[in-house]
Image 1 (tube, one colour):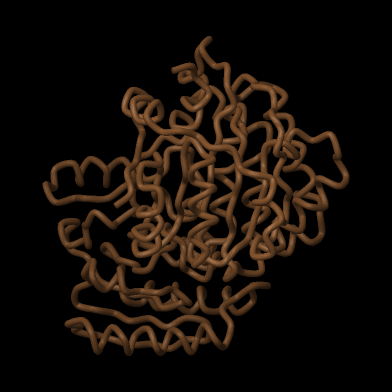
Image 2 (image 1 turned 180 degrees about the vertical axis):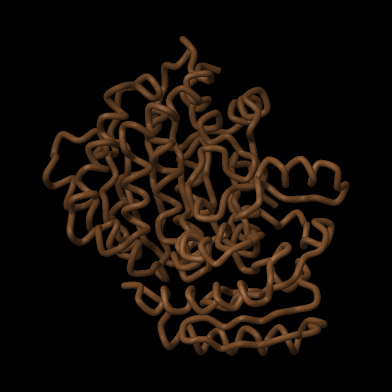
Length: 416
């Protein structure tokens, strides 16, 4: 299986044992490979991680995306652009600088493997690596969705407008069939590190290709939300926040809430919340399609057949399907495939949350995050990755699943 290298000493020890092999010119002319952003196959100068030039480049890309009509159609791309603004980069730089030293003198090489179902997540890690001074190749899936392809098209447009952009030499994007293990092998040999976003099975398969390659792996996870409403006046804001976590990526991101747990909230307020959420989703410019609604039906049927489900209520609303259960287990959430199926439950104690190694995010609304954090520290089985306010679950953080990406990428530029 894949290893995660978050410790500088551990990574350097392995890197010194792995030969980095240049890519032959013939590699770039294979008909099986589609280079959306061409690779710069010449030596490039090293640059100080998180330097002003690198941050200015990413901020310039952000401004391009924020005003582009094609980008504005997709909230996921605008969220990426917002994250890439100078104001946010300056805050991240303060964190990254603790890992920068006078030993930075080389260009690290990072091979990123993007998931098929979360269209922009790969670009965050690629940008963090770019900001850390590395050269990057991103492999996108042939099953990539519309948003991924739109993002690639926008990047192509940006690079045509800015021919002197630093991204030209430091970021390439290639597409090829996952069965083309020889391409993955050669790119793994080229890189100092590979970053894999994807399902458990995909990660296991890739990890067997040049298994000595240091890698960061971000496998399947699931997330949930915890909500408390005490008045109808809270519902509008609660719906807005919850929808921003639920709708992007068709509820298939690791941070998308698959289940909603109610804490000390009346049945009347819960139903009002559901009705407003359904209406808000119906009015959204990019809501769940008829195909997604068919998948909702398939999803709850699958749970009924394969899991021990005690169903209290099943509601098919205009945009989402609600499945209220007596108990929600980690196995149910691992099997959940998104598309607008929302498992719900009533909570009388935090100990009944579906804690597991696979539980990534717990989003909180109407309850103080720090209060919940304090309570969970007293629960011995409370396994999860992060606790955050509802509405911020999909915000990318440079510390992801406990891995500090700044540290991992900056160390590639250091002398051994």
